[in-house]
Image (tube, rainbow, N blue to C red; front, side, top):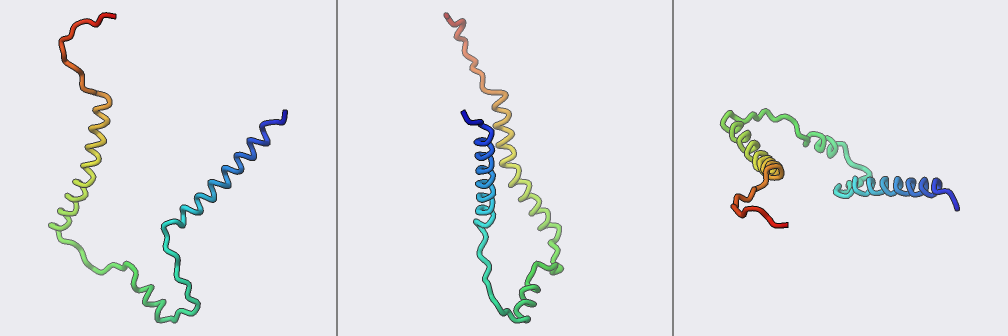
Amino acid sequence: MPSAMPRRCRSLALCGVALVACTYILSSAFVAPAPWRVGASRAETSVAMQAGGEYTGFVPDMQRRTLMNLVVVAATAVPTLVLLGAFAYYFYPNVGGGGGGATVC
């Protein structure tokens, strides 16, 4: 009977190759293809570089900052409280309070 070691090594290598292939496919799954232009002029490239997300000097006032903080807290509180409630319900389930007495075996 042949040894199981070469067979296991072969299956591990195949799993590794499949994992690398899936990682490569998933890494480029939701990325738009880049437009390939051979000769972009210098003016077009400088406009593209300037269109980045530079600091524009806008700072929201205290009222907007407070509103944004309240929105963030409310948006994170809902799923957090749902998860905490489910966690508590798992450890403290409803207990029946009936007066049925003993159960005959």
